[in-house]
Image 1: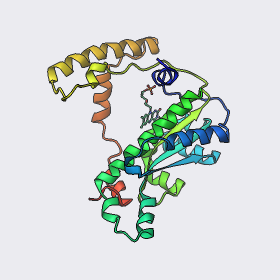
Image 2: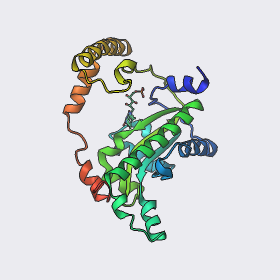
Image 3: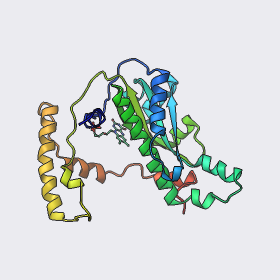
Length: 249
Ligand SMILES: Cc1cc2nc3c(=O)[nH]c(=O)nc-3n(C[C@H](O)[C@H](O)[C@H](O)COP(=O)(O)O)c2cc1C
């Protein structure tokens, strides 16, 4: 065990922050940490937008489905998949980069890059004693987010990251058993084994919710996932991404 691993294993999302802004140095350290992440073929296919305008934060908090911690935090970042600068490079270098930029592969590369950068940022913040919460809620209404942030074609805002001084620290959510997600050499697709492991995990989660909510909630993990996946959400995404000239071929 070292401090980095302790920080990683101590993660829990924080949704209540003190009324104290991050310093310029803290913001820069977090962004530099994000940039230090590995990046596919050195492509650096992401951008980070820091929201300092309080009115804009308020608007975003509404757009994401009224999540108050999007407005009240130490700083709010939006992570974007970004191939816009690569379209600019095409012109600079007089190369036909369009088919590549518009490919599913490069879209995946941009998503991976943005996620890796974001998790580095999250971990850097947590290592500084700050709390974080990712906000996928920005994908509830990307048209509105794009209008607010003025992102061009080839850029997709993916998620926000609220960072700040924790006002309330919650318990840690138990993860799936290691053996359930870690395979060696080949993927073991054994439905019977999966079902048994999931049933065992359900008991852990049920107990966790009962304790956390003083007996009010006793949902299992598979119940939660079943309900969530049955509900069609953000089904506009395929057309939205295509409209931004990504994932076209
Ligand atoms: C990409 C992404 C988007 C998320 N979006 C939201 C969100 O919009 N609102 C929220 O309260 N939590 C959000 N979360 C946090 C998850 O709900 C949380 O990570 C998960 O329940 C596990 O809990 P933990 O982070 O406390 O371990 C998001 C997490 C990720 C990775």
